[in-house]
Each structure stands twice: as structure tokens, then as C-alpha cells.
Image 1 (cartoon, helix red, strand yellow):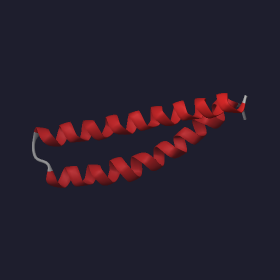
Image 2 (spheres, one colour):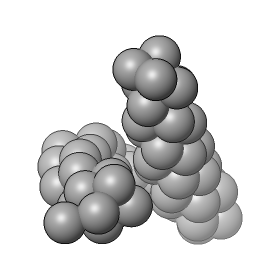
Image 3 (spheres, helix red, strand yellow):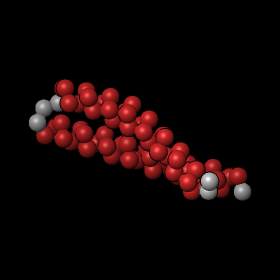
Length: 69
């Protein structure tokens, strides 16, 4: 496997865990407690946090690769 495919596989695994744990759990709380447009805003905020964390993971993989060389 190439470096890119290894990185993508790790990102898929980490992203799945992150989305299930954070967005799924917190999203369930938002669904049950928030009302109206606040519900939509909070769900979008959770999705943005998940995307930012995935981008952070990707950047960390880059940083680790440059340290090894």
C-alpha cells in the first residue's frame, strides 16, 4: 500500500469513530433537547467540528511524515 492509501485508511477509521462517538452521541442529545432552528444550527456546528477534527488528523499525518524524513 502506498503512503496516501495508508493515510486515507487511517482517516476513514478515525473519522468513523469520531462521527459515531461525537456527532452521533451529541447529535442525539441535540435532537431530543433542542427546538426549531436551534436544532439545525447545533447539528451543523457538530458537523463542522467533525470536519475540522478530520482536517486536523490529516495535517498531523503530514507533520509526522515530515518528521520521519
